[in-house]
Length: 273
Image (tube, rainbow, N blue to C red):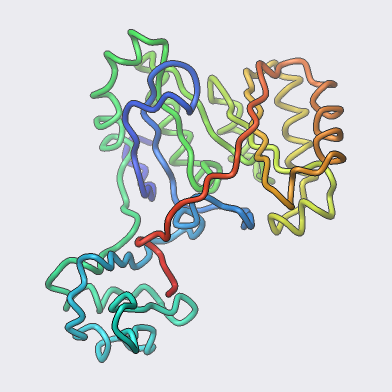
């Protein structure tokens, strides 16, 4: 289990917003949902992807002819980013990375073993102990890589480190449910109650999500509900009322956090244009 490999794309040390106390948050790659407002789109795909950092690109053009699918183009006019990648054509083969001498092109997402990752998060142990914090696993979606996530949770708990999982709750597999049951704390994202709206906004049914939440609540799991308030999508009076009515029937919810939409500047990591 300690040699189980997983795909991560980011680690944040010293987080105060991903559970109780000071926490180290690990972001896993891969998600079942495709939320319209996703704030971590680079975490959606379950494989490494080509990362472009425009500020590092000098426009040499060496990557253009080497691309087997013609996914890379130089900007047609001054003032634009020097390079453009068509994500529909890109196969993430990495040939462009091999010829990029400035480092503007690299892989987004790296494989790591449970032992390697635990050795990283364990370095912050003194902060966990002093603040009542611990390790939070997010993404992406942790249940997308259930065996890796479960192994990391077990490793932390064997070393008396508090664990939290930030989840959308969408899993149909027993391995995914096992992950949610193993965590000390669940940060459960509730993106909508109306089934049609949920399907339109996220690409999946919310039936298994609500079912899993009720099951975990009945088990007495510590749960913090996170409700994204997205203008035009989840901020209707009806959705807020339906969400409140649903949550009022649960017994193990410790609190409900309303999450405002965060507007980021254009991302360099996975830009299509």
